[in-house]
Amino acid sequence: MTVIGLDDTDSRELGMCTTYVASRLAGDVAAAGGTVRRTLLIRLNPAVEHKTRGNAALAVHTDLPADHARTLAADRLDLAVDDPETNPGVAVADCEPEAVPPAVADFSRAAVRDYHEPADARALAREHGIDTLERGTGRGVVGALAAVGAYRAFGEWTHETIAYRERERWGTERDVDRDSVFAAAEGAYPTVWDTVDRVEGTAVCVPRTPCPVLYGIRGETPEATRRVARAIDSEPVARTHTFLTNQGTDAHLRPARASQIENGRAYRVDGTVVDGPGTVEGGHVFLTVRDDADLRCAAFEPTKRFRDRVRALRAGDRVTVCGEVADGTLKLEKFAVRDLTTTERVTPDCPDCGRSMESAGRGQGYRCRDCGTSADGKAERTVGRDLEEGWYEVPPVARRHIAKPLVRSGFDAPTHPER
Ligand code: ATP
Image (cartoon, rainbow, N blue to C red; front, side, top):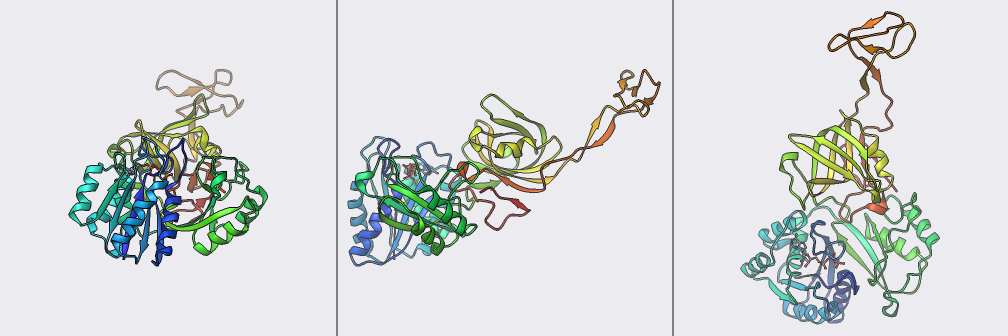
């Protein structure tokens, strides 16, 4: 078997998409008499600044001999856009995908949660006899090698069926029938998820960038994602391709204490709300969670109705927060309510007239001047909460590719999925 990894063929301005290059390469492999066993779409560390959009890297698994596969991959790099920010890389391993060296699988896991230097990718590839090919600065070799190790590195997989546009339409407005998207999404939920956002009224499966993708359908099984893709009415579809992917798995999150967090990585931290939540100009919501250190968390305006869930938190609530850290602030993707505060300490009311008492002086309790009644200290009042225990998440319009939607199984508490 041969594993071909590739990355970094597109740019924000000039379009293209590495999934498309991989799909065409898979077509070339088949045309050359090879069998394509699967194509992987791997989302790497979402905090990497060089990314065009979703930090994807691709791998094609085939029985074509490695040197033949390498030639086809090199030829397909002609699809890569000519942009100084586009630096394609290819890595070709002559082995079973599940038998890549453990060090390469470790490299993949770290590429999802951390950072690598291209020089380290080259050295590791050389050490294990993995052939590499580069254009430009060759930065893409990081993602290419990560894609080669991914099948061994990860255990949780989902699927995406992508429909591509005819070439002459690239960069023009997409013609996709919205009603057919909503109907197909409704019929296949929850096996297929994040196709639409029902509250925002958005077909989130249709991108807005100049790339060749018409729509991408994500879900648990390839049969279901293909079925939904087929049910959508649209402009002509040039080709479709179904990928095995680590999207929707939370592979980027690592459990940590608040004192351990670093910028540019994503975490899952347990703590207690100690401050906030407060809303600032622009509609962003901030709060502080305390673990072994204080951790500032944010729900930014694009997370829409999720901010209402965050605003419903109160000091004293025990939570688990998840998201990427930038500038010392954790950008919330989801959180779990572990324990809700149900009482608060308030100034007591007078038992006779019912009005609020006044302080009788420092440490001297409270009294009602009119009635002469007194109280030793604050009173406890039950507070109504419009949150429940369990997980809350950003809506589909704000979902990161790699983030696990709550409609999927495997969460450690009840879930409140957004759709
Ligand atoms: P698309 O998915 O649409 O092809 P993209 O968002 O994946 O675009 P790329 O153009 O592939 O973005 O750019 C990402 C670059 O960052 C690649 O060169 C890749 O090798 C590199 N990269 C990815 N993950 C890491 C990492 N963890 N550390 C260092 N570099 C990385």
